Length: 123
Image 1: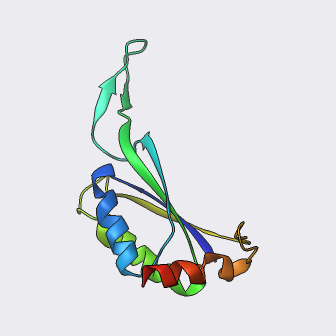
Image 2: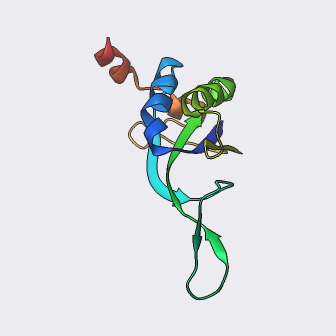
Image 3: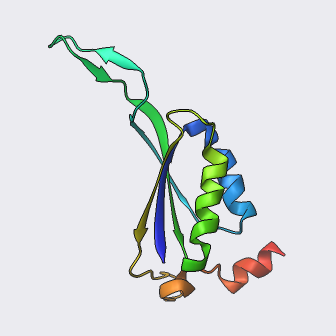
């Protein structure tokens, strides 16, 4: 299993979310954040004669996926977030050692599966 953390532009969130849902990836966490990378926007400091990068609004998406869904999830996030400009974001992938579903006690990849009652209610 893997944990994917993607930092993207806030206005691309719904595009990424739609792509993930279309790819069959369910369950995600969204966090509003700010930061900077190589964007060319700078602000001047008042206490020294230098410049520092401007902090820009971003959104962090976290998704836990099974091994077989990793490439699909990465492609969905990339496709939904990409504008082809500096500042589109980054995707970070880490190995997820263990997952436990609190309600059912399911562990491992079974914890990432939608519960049967959820699937039946959606149909």
